Image (tube, rainbow, N blue to C red; front, top):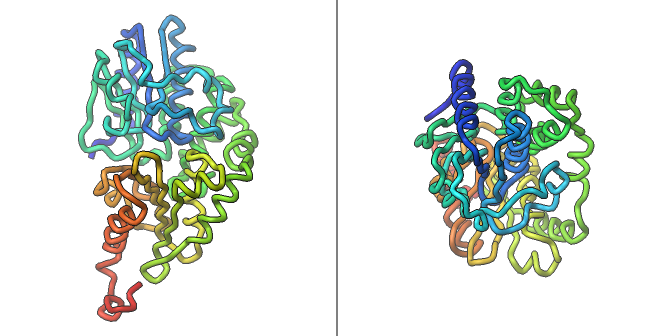
Length: 346
């Protein structure tokens, strides 16, 4: 696995800064179905580059044609995001943020293929690095942590706008500092960002305390369907296209529903499945303990971390559950006793 720490990170910061210095046009893109870390990190990086290299042409791309999730529209510079499918230039430098698999960039991948040079800033495990510089730190709580440290490396005085974007990135990827990845580095960087003008209350208000009534009705339906397997250690629920149409909720609003499933007492692994247009299902996985669910996501064509991963497959919710559940139950196979392997194993 490719990783970068300590001196290696500083060397890669130097290389990435050199690539930026040489480029006139720069495109920054995160993964498909972007979350707070993806959006906050790429917007912050754009602002950082414009501050340090004001003569550069910098554009932030959305991997999908869908608009950015409503809960993140409060982020500074969010109105400057451009759909990758409408970006026709061949940038001098393409920077991938918060992903290590080009295939997870959707329309952004074609822009990357046209770019003269590529750099990566990510915290997802990566076995096949690409580009001229790949800074990958799986132990970092969020890509936002690395981008914040890049700003410090450049010697910049972090602006309140950059601080807000990066605080959102870290807060959302650590589940409001409740997940296992909320380590000392994450708290240290978050504290520094607050000192530079980030507003935790504004992030919380927009991301976690501004739910539409339609979403709450969808959440109620999802809560009513929660089912457990493996003696309560695996919790699962789902939302269909029909649910979203009936309640009037939007697809992006349902991204956080995996945390509702994750909250079940006694559960160690949470799986939330969501039907999306086009006959596909998106799956979100969370692990509360020491079980590594990233391999399950990878086996289903996705990726992510030990404790937070996702995937998208063709088919129905039933198809997705039939594909994912055996893989999740296999994580407990070595613990199963002869009795547990019997008819009452569930």
